[in-house]
Each structure stands twice: as C-alpha cells, then as structure tokens.
Image (cartoon, rainbow, N blue to C red; front, side, top):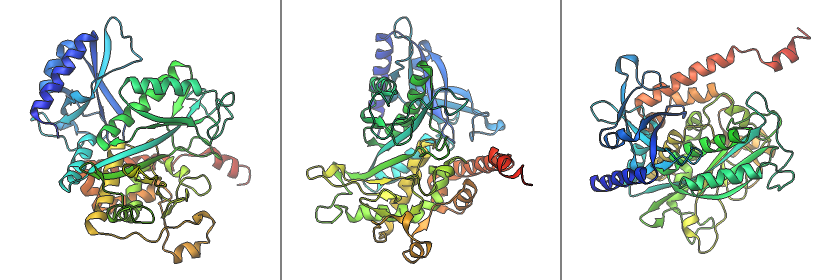
Length: 448
C-alpha cells in the first residue's frame, strides 16, 4: 500500500527524472468503462501541481463517466507509472506519460473509474491476506491497413522467417515495451496467418492492467510507424483462429504461492481448487466483461481453440481453465489459466471479475467438478449434459442478460460501472442487430 512518505519520494523522483530528460509534455492517461485509453497533456510547468492536487477535466463525454450535470473530474497521476514515451523525440523536449486515478472534485475516488474498481477488489483480496498476480497472453493481427484484412504473411505457429515477415515488428515492439519498464517473456507467430503474440512477465494485477493498456498502444504505434495496422479485434477473419487473452493467475500469501500443494496430483492447493471452482461457477455471468464486444462471440465458437465449454483440466486446451504442468523447483510458477477473455476487454474490469469469482470460491470453500482431460468438442451433447459441462453464452445479448442477474459482478464493479456497462452493451447490441450483413445479402437476396 502506498504511504504518504513513499508517494512523496515518488513525486520527487518524477520531478527529478523530468528535469534530467528535458521532458516538456506529460500525457495523463486514464481508461473509460469499455477500456479505451484516454489522455490529455500538461506541460512540465504544471507537473508539480498535478502530482499534488491532480488536474481537472470534463468527464461528460467519456464513455460511462459522469452525466452532464456532474461532469467535473480530477485526474491524479500515479507517480510510480511515470515513463518516457520512446516513440516521441527524446532530444529537445521529451514526452512522458503517467496513469491517473480519477477523482471527484472533493478528492474522493470516482466510482466510475475502472482503475479504482480494480484497486477496490485487490483490497478485498489483501484483507484476506492475498496478493493477486496475473500474466495475460494477448494475441493480435497485423494487416496492411485498417480498411481490410489483407494479411502480411502465410506463417503459422512459431514460424520463423521468411514466412514470418513481422519478426522485426515484434522485435521493435518488445524493445519499446522494455524501454517502458514492461518485462517480456516470449514473442512468437501465432496459429493464424498474420497473427502474433507477445507475453508480458507475470506481475501484480494493477501493474499488469496498466501494462496491458500500454502494450496495446505500443503494438499499434510500432505497426503504424512501419506502415501497417495492428488490431486486437477478437475475430477479424472468418475461418481463422480469433485472438484471445489467456490469463494466467495465482494468489500469493506473503512470499508463498497459495496455489501450490506438493502432494496433490495437480500440485494445486485447496485454495487453488476453490478458486477454480469459483471461476467455473461464475463463468457465464462474467463473460460479458471478459468478452465484451459483439465480435467477441464470433471467436467463442467450437473448432478454433477458443473455449466454449465450462470445464477444467491439465493438458486439454479445449477447456475453459487449464492447469499448466508443474516443474519441480518452480513452486511459485504454479497457476491456473483462464482462457475465455479476449484482448479487446477492459483489463481493469476483467481482472476484477475474475478475482471476485475466484475469491467467492475460496471464501465458500467450493469444490470444482472432476477435471475433463478428453476433448470436450468431440463429446455428444448428451454426454456433456450428463457430466454437468455447461457452456458460455453464445452472443453478447445472452451474456448481458446473465450479467444483469449477477450479484457477484454488481458487487465487484459497483453500481455505477455495473449499470453504465450494461447500458452501453445494450446500445451496442441494438445497433448491431439492425445491420444487414454481407452474409444475409449473399444468402437470401438471390432466393427470396
């Protein structure tokens, strides 16, 4: 927890670094309810005042923020997130960024700020003695431009040049991320043509949510600089794998991984299994948050590696939750992988609802069903039913209806975000369902 003394030290560090690097502009970043990164710039002359009292802005036109009659907001920079933007000129007036907490003019946290929502859920975990760690794997596509889906390569999983022509794009992206203090473990070509993945190093959930927002911007920035387009759209191309954001997660108690149990066949503790049980129980109602776009449900269909059925196992990649193999001596790496989220979600809200679901299982001592090592996609519907294997919602509308009934999500997000999010998604669904698609014209126009 940040104390007044450590915050003072951090503020002094920021002012010193800004002077050392000749920073002229500081971009204050924050996120709206659907996970879009917002910002405004201040000059270095305003920096000290901003760190002390925040900077006022009009929140009335930010998605899911305040109504017109209560539009004044304050962005208070988090000094620990001060970073130079490597793609801006470093000589003669550099540019830096800081993530902000959004406050009301009186100084109290604004309940519609997704970063505050995550902090609130992390405090609940801390009150139980836990720190929540996550390691998301974000997939994305490179296309020639934003107007179509012309691919850059015919490469496949882990391919190298000459098939993977985006190697240099990934290399530049990794170097940029590391320059911004974001550790990277892997980068590689994914299964689909022109699809890629860069995996950030496991860390606490708040830092990682900030990192996800930065990662998405950096990927797009590097692509744009090189004359191509990067997209985190979950399913941009029919007939090819979509892009997921598999989230590895664990709870730590002090310096010990609370998910590890030496004598268990899966090396999972009772805490870990209850966390899995909570995620499985609440998976349908949290899906509108983890997969929040109409297009998300074009990815969540059988046959393309994306999970559809609510089950868990160790080796089986068709399950919703996978338990990576334990390696002796690496107890702290024991974790579970939740595989339904996609990279276009709001990471602050996504991590919040996953944590809330898992903690509900831990607090209630829930027990998960037996693991399913067989391929669930190949089972008959009757067999899945007899084994109690449920399914995730198949459309945004179905997901929103389940979300509306969820006390767990309402409590995790708070009333403001909960109702604003649902309202936003209902509008999106209404706009989508009245569209006439290319499929309908090709299928029906010649025969009806």
